[in-house]
Image (cartoon, rainbow, N blue to C red; front, side, top):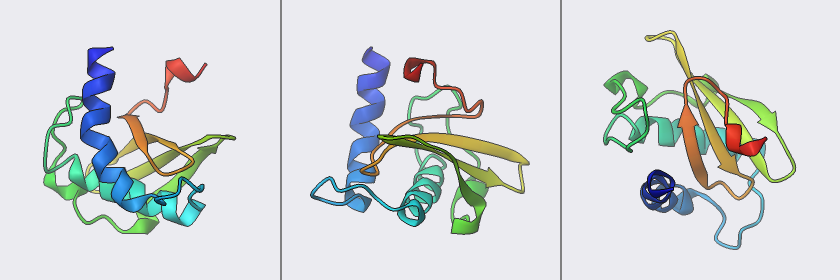
Length: 112
């Protein structure tokens, strides 16, 4: 639980800047842009997630590197693919654009 609180403390300020202030749902296009930006920020600081600090090649990826993996009623799972590494980062995001978790498996067991 402490890990989740730590992650939220780091991520909420990042995504809140990009999300709508009135908590309206973000569009899919906005969700993609947020995901690419957050992936780049994971290369600038260690968020405390299992993958640690990402390689600097994650900074500045184009929006085209992202796609919607899953769209549910209250959240998105967005995939950001780094062609240099050949890996895809999955980000769990609220429909308001707040990023709650990220990993390379795409599985978020607490959603089930």
